[in-house]
Length: 135
Image 1 (cartoon, rainbow, N blue to C red):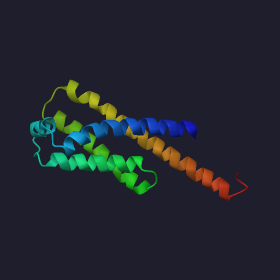
Image 2: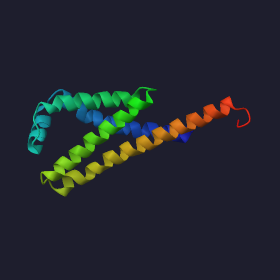
Image 3: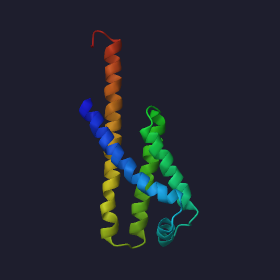
Image 4: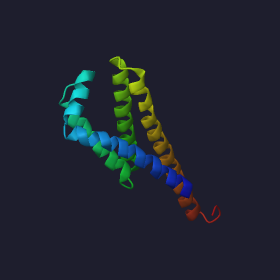
């Protein structure tokens, strides 16, 4: 259980750190974010919206409890990053710009996998505590 918890927090921390690194500039609607969205053909008004959505997703992942909210947060953050990768590839940017970005969804998937391992371990521990025959 301890290794699972450590792996969960390492992957979740990395995932949230990187997603937060794009959420804050998006919320502030900085020039680089607006320029990047413009190059992809998206309107500038989406920049702060997506920034706030990412920040709320990060908070949902870091706050204890709320398993259903975490599921939605994982889905939303993965849609965001996969959509960004697809958009960059679709406008014809070189492979060297978007292929390395696949590391982030991988880290997000590992966080998700370890989140479920923790949930299953916790459920098993509760079941054993409630049933003296299993404990």
